Length: 429
Image (cartoon, rainbow, N blue to C red; front, side):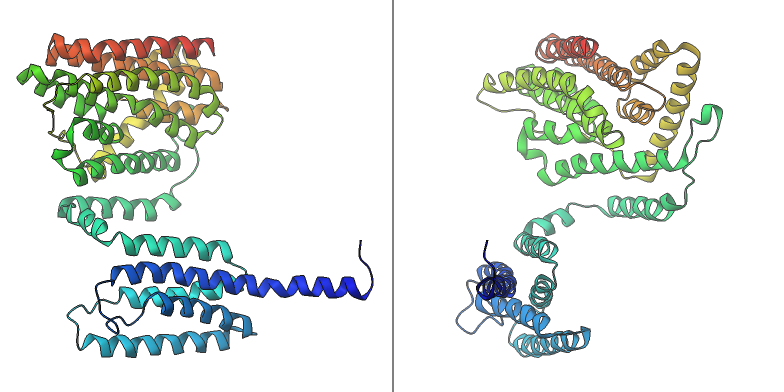
């Protein structure tokens, strides 16, 4: 261990590298954003860009030095205002000769300065994350525009209304139990509604953006997050009209139904993290059976692909759908508490089986909410698996009754096998 003047000099030298590292990161973040902007304007001739790779790198370095030399917010604020003025003038002069008067690159330049300053001030991780997100948003402009174009006015209005009610209403709802057995907690009920609507939103708009030409497989994967029941009904009708498409339609149905199992695991784990270990084994076994069967059907599909029609799904963010699900959730929560009080665990399992006929999400959220305090985690997991197993059997029966024996052979068998294996694994666990 070094002591004396030499050690002090070494320690000072090491500390002297800290600002250099910060400035290097500030420069790197600027170059990252500049790389994307330079690639975006790669067809512009020399002098045709207001800012490119070098300029954005220098702006990031400028932000870092401004923060390093500033002993308070005043100097840094004046430096930022100076950068704003310089870029506004530059883009204003450039706009006289260009039809594109967007300010995206201007905002990106200002963010670059802020990221550089943030690194030097000790916020390296948030600055790096912000720079990567900025580059991502800049790069995927066309994709984001297509996503916006896919929204209908009704869907946008429904999403905004639900978000408004959630953001405004959720914080003021009482987080306490009401009614018999204190089963109704307004805050938790509405929070669960928002959770399930958000997950369904992902699947719903994945189908809207992908369109109907992506085939039954992509449609099945997306529909599993929105409504596997709706897709099962839709593809079963298609199979009845076109029996030769039974393999590919069966693969789509199995993919949608298989997505239900990781979805159950995700929902339950979000509500109660302790349920993850109790549910992961049966959910994994059921998913492997269904996904494996779907892969086999896909591999043995006929050369002419079929089933490229997307299922008609209701907007999961529609206020009416959210309120209906909230009411269903409240009824199931009260029934679960009542049956638990009167019949014990047997009542929970009976309710799980009945609920699984039509919906798995509501009973999954209910049992996850009861887990730990009112219900053992193992019993909660078993109830969730029972609901998923019953739901799988019901969907298999749909394929057989509506789609015919060929589709039933391809879809109903794997779903019944998944239900049986999942129940065995959950019971043993």
